[in-house]
Length: 186
Image 1 (cartoon, rainbow, N blue to C red):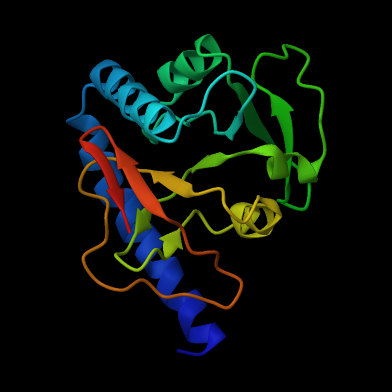
Image 2: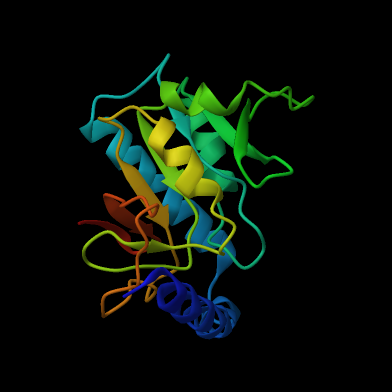
């Protein structure tokens, strides 16, 4: 698929996925999902031997996205430094410490300290192609992560796409999907 066709397909898919997400969100218990997501992330932390002094990049969810408040709080309680993004004017991402009330930027390269990245998205297919909102923020940021830092896209249950999603050369593949139902490694 050429780049123009992929862009057109992605735009159409985003519209459909956002409409489906509105229906999914209406039927979800956000508080229960928040706790479940935190529990699943802590399982990853334990399984990978992560803990005090490690860094994880996460994000502060918008209302339609799966909630991440409990996840961030649980990671901080475990002594893990959590970085959250600051969107720059060109849609690239800077990062700041989630505990920093002043939100002092640490620079776009700060993601390179993360041993795990929790990223937003609208859908992921079985090959690890992620479809986001279209700004390209994570496609710019993810190449700066450590090569051994897995990327988990946080989705609502049912948002793993059943067929292949269109991908451009700049699209960064991801390693798995985290939902309130658990983790699917790809």
